[in-house]
Length: 336
Image 1 (cartoon, rainbow, N blue to C red):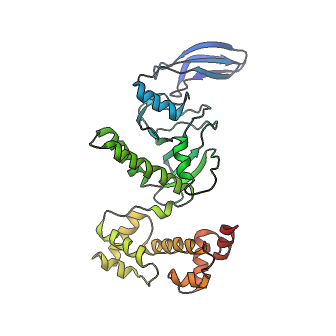
Image 2: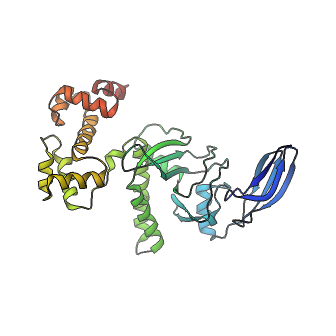
Image 3: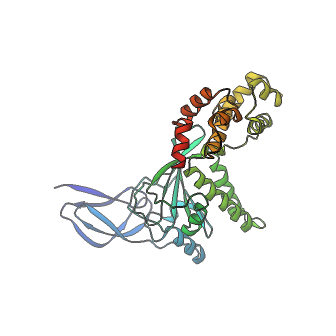
């Protein structure tokens, strides 16, 4: 007869208990010798269900905030996370030495966003992420290389409606996040931890930034949110490209703006941003072309010239290569 070890629902380790195909358990206290957590389970055959949540040793106010975001889900054993909570947003960071991979069916009253720093994105300088709407049952496994972000349902949806007339249901929807989101999240964590003067005001502002950044990424605007370099020469070049994308820009001219040689400038630009200066210039031009194509009064030939492309043919070729559609197809799709 088939038997299986009962795994700890918190750390994923084997407990000292097994079940068989004919096992029946009711209100069984399961103790894990590794993470020292106890939960209540029931079992019928090889199917195990958790029926009791462990007591958490957090302040009543914090516990209330946590419950509003993650609900009564058994997915989160708080002793395995560092967490930073406000009314509308919570960031949970796994404690590396203690968390293990596991997957339990669960749902939350808030939007759950998971950013995975261990999965390489197909886009340079980006992380893989996924979002799940409130009250959607899912079973993604916990990963010590992830940040778990929870945003209050009403707070998130009010801001989402600034971008769209409808709010879709996200079921572990995957998307890409610009790597600079990590800086913004860590700023929130730093401000929260240090309890600096007027921290509530800055945390409120950072909550807005994080939420809008995530929503924009869902609309595919991650490439438009590339961080400005802290290197003067590269930042100067980025500013110039953003303002003069319609002009005939050369790498030599950009390098001269930052008092660098062409070779050094090219090398540093690609090292920091993941693409060459010319590739960055084309991205900016394509971004502006998309905006113009959404306005029917702009002719495609005129858009090509205004965005710095030498001809309509060159514009169409570049646009299709980056977007996967011709300018006409993109306009038709957007206006449908």
